[in-house]
Length: 534
Image (cartoon, rainbow, N blue to C red; front, side, top):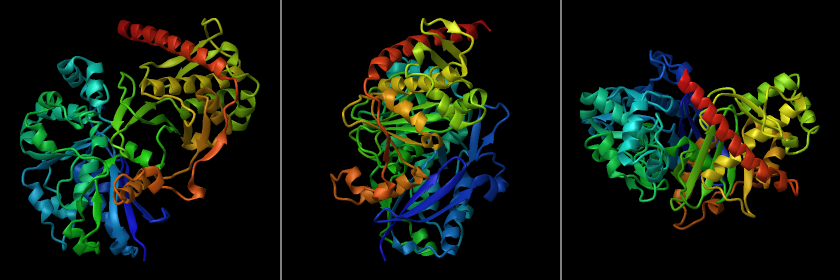
């Protein structure tokens, strides 16, 4: 029987596991949903939203009990744990776990005749883990950014300006509001390293890539920033442990899992990473690729050779290649905004939407639209703004102009912010589109023309968990191996070239990109001024 490799995904709403064989074929998958499978914890979409509406947490012990349930499901289904050669995984980014003093000894000496939950339920100094949805640390951002010389300086050190959800700021808040709990904490894990710790039977280190989402790691030196540590919490370095590359073999599976489930003793545990970096690995890209995920929100992932931090987007150490970096820019206004225009202008039909798109030329005769149905991340703006070819703001567009305007406006923005994160378009650059809207060839053609590259499509469900499988395989490959050569999915799972860019359109879109930049700055200034006057 061939070896298997496991990938665990500790996401916001569920824990997922996937098993692949050495040829990358998926052999097993299972999940546990927090709300429905563990209703006793009273979560909504995997979280507790507190009375102030901005404090959002999840019960740490719920994740422990969910892993128990998941492993029991696998055992009851006859899954052969003895075939597993290695495992890795990921966790929702920015969530943090606070192990109580004495917890390590319990974790190292779990008894196979009891569940992990029963033995670890009292092992957390802070029972509710802050997660990525939390927005209660605005005042702490100013403190941290001020200590290092401003938001841009913080981005140069840690890969991003201060964000409320980032772990360093959450720790600073806990030090301020629950000093007793912090003083009783012997180790702080991210959700990712927490998941790895449960499988390892010991505290697993934080990896460079997920550690980049904390406003604590110096992404170039790949060590904790002493200044950031000092601002966020006393004795913080000892509580975090030393960070490691994402492909580090952190040890073998715990004796508890060997005894209780039949894992072989030499099964390796590879450092877990964040869910976004894991998705990059799960899509199996090559250096220079641009991944555009088209969902309710749109996300652009970049594999870039150098860190070029800015006030927009974030930079992580690359989970595949620690010498390079991963840029990420997220936009709240994605498919839902496109669908709203489709409903309003095309009678609720995507086919009609695509037909209307063909009635206007690329460049839309100079008309540009900015569509922010919900408050955007960058720019920090809400509302709809339409401009004619003379940059004069107008109240409305004809339906066919509106259809093209939302697509061109959105993807000019995606390109502009990708360039701010370090994207350089070269002869081998390709866009890999994924997500629901990647099935619409008309949308993909606009992306191809604006980026001036070929667009490939891939449909990789559960890419984060799959990324754990791939990274587990890669970690056991000979040192110096290329990820894209070791992880080479079968032809039927390779991205497929769907759209080629139309020749000559860069002459229309390059000046349009500059116009978009200027109009966005104008809109942002006006919006923020209006907000300040309220």
